[in-house]
Length: 143
Length: 143
Image 1: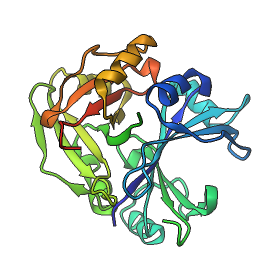
Image 2: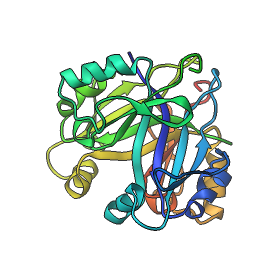
Image 3: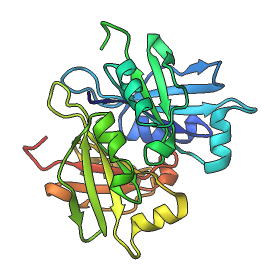
């Protein structure tokens, strides 16, 4: 058991609104922007400083495409801010089983494929203290 | 330059509302609850799984005292959720100098004493993408 920070998803109207702060001033390393067609967002990953094991998590800037999509609706309703917190776990199937036993509200009750071969489950903010939590299991041999 | 996750501050009406999820189900390690008189909050730190260097950041549950205080006002206005993101940095004075040069909005323009010998500066959500960011410098010899 236990969990590590994978990333913090930050919904913004435009990457350019905040890139100076996160990249140029704080000094986080920006990866090439990826467009996720299925979600209608452009994703900019800003790596936190790696720790001794080479990982440190990241800030993920989510910029919605024009039109209707989940991040655009989030921005309309709440303005920019933390959209979700993603935590890496080692046994997502066992964890989901325990969560369901305790009637934790899940957005998807079975792990679904995420980016880069991960498997992910979203936990409803009602069960976490008001924040959407993404649980992420890295592909085997990649953790 | 660069930054590491120190903690995510999560405002909740009561620790007990969410402790089963974070401690018992996710398996984060709970430290003894501390009461911070000056802020009017009871703080429960839940350690994320340590990485190779022994640090991994934490989820910080903030439960306001009865009456008026910043966390109570946050809950009244927005409900439970992420109150701030705290990042550890190595040269807070140099960073604050750069932030001020770029007209980043700071809550306190000079580092002030935080918990456990740290020095902290808060950056206004307007400059970060909608989230209050706490910059933390650990005491010398402790990072």
